[in-house]
Image (cartoon, rainbow, N blue to C red; front, side, top):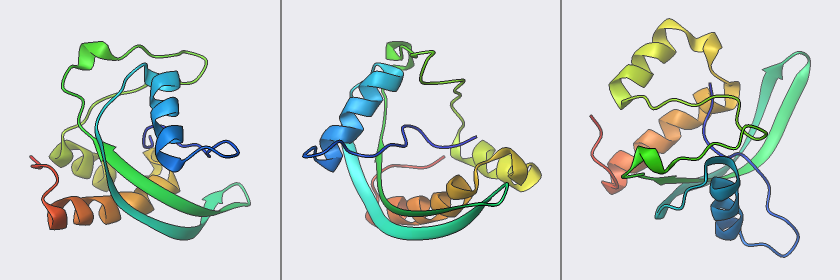
Length: 121
């Protein structure tokens, strides 16, 4: 499992425009987004591969899940997990998650709580 909409901006495309484009392309949605952080990571992602990325992380809340229109050529599967269920799944099945998601999630959660962006249950 991983996060939603990983991508890179096109030439001359702003980060936020790229994010909105990818949300529409992958999920057919548009949401208000809050930037939570940006950072560089360098991780072993398995199979002899490493990722060295400059990451911008945004979060948003989708009020109506029925609005999602998955593009099957972009998205293999998706699910919604409450924060506490997600944390329990990570503890019980860490190998089910991508390395960058495991690295990213604590940073995102810390920023969300610090800035009181959303109420976590």
